[in-house]
Length: 205
Image 1 (cartoon, rainbow, N blue to C red):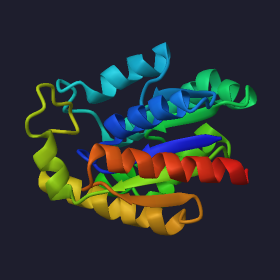
Image 2: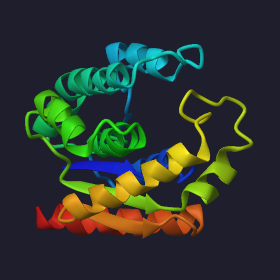
Image 3: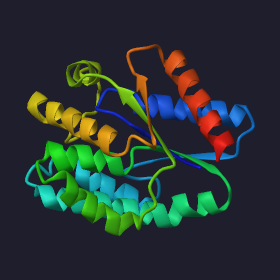
């Protein structure tokens, strides 16, 4: 089962997805944790290029293509082998991030970015996506104190509002696989809710 966590910056995706992975392991589920962009060496190298604050002159389509390239390698090298091994894959971000950030946030176009990524993933969408719902403003407040801000963290509130709008399109287009969780709750509450959703979906597989 392929499970992804999505949401705007500051929604707690990384914290929650790692907590969910740890709890599933404790409960005896055979699962792996990974992230995007990254997860494997080649994709982590691409991540460094994308998020480097020095790369302010990166073209928006170059950015979208780099995300798709990183995703392709990650899929082939890590996600698909784990799924073939009957493992639950917990992934921090996947295709929906590109649709929201590059498709709408960068104004490339939702369907244009979807097409690029269709080429990369060959139809392998997540079985379940947990969307951590939070406003752009609240999310940015949470990341204000981060010691290390990446290139996207430094974008304007206008950009992050567009990303939030992009996620609303994602929620509408792919509502059959997305479960929305209120990210204004405690880490423990969100984790428990997400674990419950995953176990229920896994039992229905």
